[in-house]
Image (cartoon, rainbow, N blue to C red; front, side):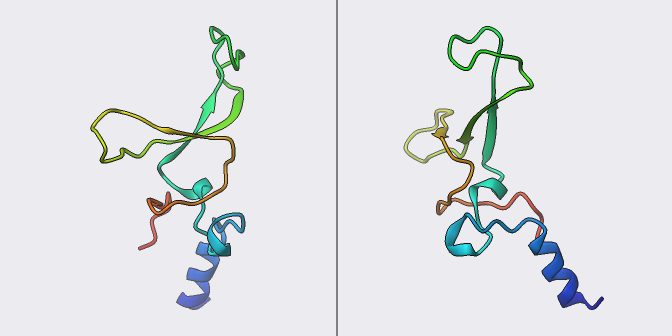
Length: 90
C-alpha cells in the first residue's frame, strides 16, 4: 500500500461518526475523557470495581482556578474545543 492509503486506514481505525460533524473528532477518542467505574462502598453506582457506571468524565483543567476538577457526562460521544486525540497522528 502507498502512504496515503496507510494514513487513511490508520485514521479510519479510530474515527467516530458520533462526534463533531462526522469528522472523527469525538470525546470517545479524546485523551481528556475517562470512564467511571463502580465501587462496592458506594451508595450510588454500587458494585464491583470492574463494572462501568456508564458515565464519563472530562478531566481537563479549566483556567478558572487550579483545582482538580472534572466535568461529568452521561454520554460517551460529543465534542468540545479542548479535544486532544488519544492517538499519535505523526
